[in-house]
Length: 363
Ligand code: MN
Ligand code: MN
Ligand code: MN
Image (cartoon, rainbow, N blue to C red):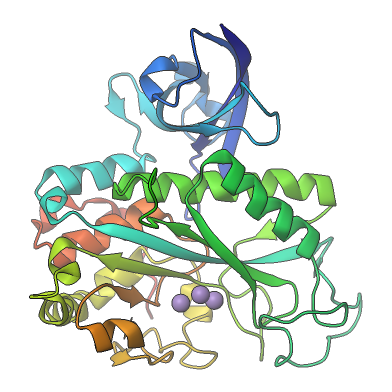
């Protein structure tokens, strides 16, 4: 028998950007398992998370993805949940939107996803490493830098990466970013022996990775910020480049052709995509700082000023994946994955209902 804690993690009703919530319960399991079905449904007070009114406040947590809890240790678990009200997904449950798109035919395309999650560490009200009342030296030396004068927050970054690895989260790596105090961790299908290639899992793992970053930040007195443009002016914003492949783009016989077809479909749906690519992403997608303007769609080989980039290695091999550089740091990966698959897998637009309710982002 295992007696341990299960930390139930879910997304709240904050609009336009949801935040993570969690609470834990003691569980008894016959043996160690990561099967969500072994974890009971649970309830929470939705009136405290912008998900219900006080007179009917119970929302349901349905476990959907389980990893090891690297903080509490052996016999403890992190449990990603979907939120339900009565028997249907709550309107804030965008994972259900992704499931709908997969069920409507996208699952046949066997899409894999990888997310390059950029974020900014804050110490109090300034980015980590920044002087209290001044700017640090201009950008240049910080990206992938090393040394006390170039780096801030690495202890947390390294602890977080190790925690993700120990948890069984599909982390690929980390790097220091262009702005001092800004970092990136990558999560997605790696093709390793125990990896789950289901696109839902890649998205679940990104949220679990974010939760661990917030949680470990508490130990280091640092706050992870996912704003797309945390500091105005000549400082890079933070994005969440989304790498996507399908069976057809990975096939040496059809790869580049399928990638180009996907890009031409994406071009026609640019506005629909931008609606779910993060709040205040217009502040980041200015056309400067390694981005394309939010008002334009450009595709290119190895072009960091493009909306969609075909990486050099993919172009040379003739198959693989492409990178959508538009999603901002504060995206919901479920929504971005659902939107991309709706477009490139020709799913009926009526299946993708979420973005239609969100406010318009473009001017
Ligand atoms: Mn990157
Ligand atoms: Mn980056
Ligand atoms: Mn990238």
